[in-house]
Image (cartoon, rainbow, N blue to C red; front, top):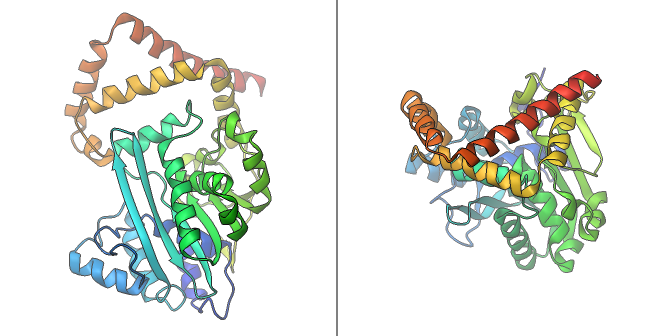
Length: 355
């Protein structure tokens, strides 16, 4: 079986000779996860190869979110297809006050199009908090930033636009495409959502969202969890993954044949997760979800860790602090936490019974 690394070996041909495809989209959606901090100055346009050389000088090539990213960066940089592609307008914002994690990069392709890549959730606690906020908030700060970013790129470059991302980045791509200004919409030719979550009713039922559906390409693995969260109305392509369960969210496990993903069938497991979350959202009000999420992250923040890696590095100490924080909660708050979790478990049990 082949993945994006195999594809890059096989398809190492310039975009000038072979047109853009869905696998290129997945690779470029991952580009926004790479460590460009301090590498590209404002408004500067440099090739991915140049960016990688600068990153080596800074010694930050290993500062990646996923171990495979360490190999992805040099592979892209040294390739014929991607090495001379230019990148610019990199932003990476972590704002604890707004509970916002937002990162994006603009990729200028040789076919005179631009791919705007939005980063998904990184390993920061703030990033995960913003994701959970989507369960009760119609709009989160990174979605607003994605619209502003896309409008600015479209105004600066008059090129046709492809917009994409993986995980939360896919959600941002769809949101930005739907709610950007009319001039920007005219430039968009495709929007790629790679296993990103959906939206609550306010967005799903909006005219702006419905208007852009024909341009949206959504790809999810056969046992997708993240990509089945909340609501979707766009057409979806099921991709074969070599992983199982939620680990299929790992885009490096997605299988490729030629210039396309290997198609698969949706599984009962993915349907079960989707139905369970949907039923839970129906039973638990947005206000209750907000209280639950805020309390849970207050417990996490009692450890003073900033990233998921830090949370697991001193597991015994951090768990002890979380237990202590939970024990100090008011009886009313403990009751709310227990009730919310019980509703989720009951929704899952009811789904199993119905099957």
